[in-house]
Image (cartoon, rainbow, N blue to C red):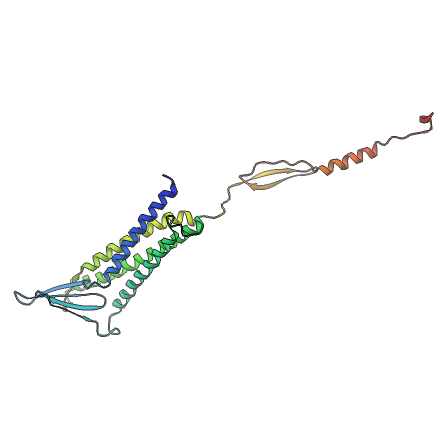
Length: 254
């Protein structure tokens, strides 16, 4: 199998991996189960509390559920604003990463040279990595907050546990990071190398009629020795004829 074909298959696999990871990250935003808590008030009735970045919800065993958005955006804690911003950045950068990867992949042949396509693919890989790290920071920060409140003995409010959306988001972020790293490695080897490489240089000798000079030429050329120009020969022959001119005297005609 040729190297170009191998790289093409690797790009397809990495793109599918990153696309699945981006879809998983997007699916966590509307999901309410970022945190979960179960409270049993009486024997037959159990209340389930769950929340996400946008709202709080409650449901009971009868199947009735109710959700309420956060009343004031300015009254929210700073970490919640940061998690919202990072989650939105993960979705946006993942979208543009997919667009750049589709343009630069070898199997699409949208246009441009091989070097330009490799550089576009490398840019898409970097964008996928940014999306994966934004998602990983979001879910890890949220989980750290939930775990810190749960294990804190001085925390008297209702304690929550990790919801299913966090695990789905971690899986999607890992797919984005793994696919972007492999894609960036293969595309970077081809797209970031010098476009006009030069090999080692060695001396070659050019000889003239009076002097012999040494110049540095590329390694691909061979040693070439040039003789004197042809007009030197013409000058020399004319000078020789002028110096060997025959002299006639009076006795030569007798």
